[in-house]
Length: 125
Image (cartoon, rainbow, N blue to C red):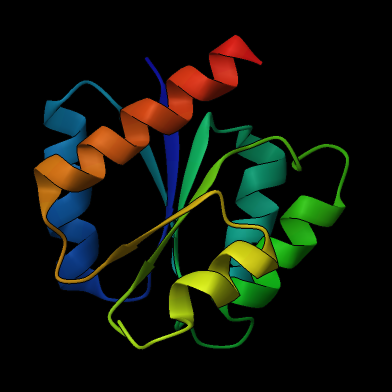
């Protein structure tokens, strides 16, 4: 089963997305802030990370930068999720090291396509 780390602090979002991903056959591990996300990425070795950008403590941009700077986690694809669909947010997320970007509220089928594309890209490289 493919493991996805979902870094999110909103319980409703965690419940909704983790259940939907589990029904699609993914093993979902949850971290509720950036520090926990970095630690779980190192410990759990997920195939992909879905990273909320607005997190308490260590935000998603900083957590992504740490993960991409570490040899043990730099190759894990990261999809940023943000409720802030402002001009430049996508570019900021990509600059921080995210491999893709999507907005909240989550349109599940669109996100699922991004997940599948990121996973298949990693399998090819």
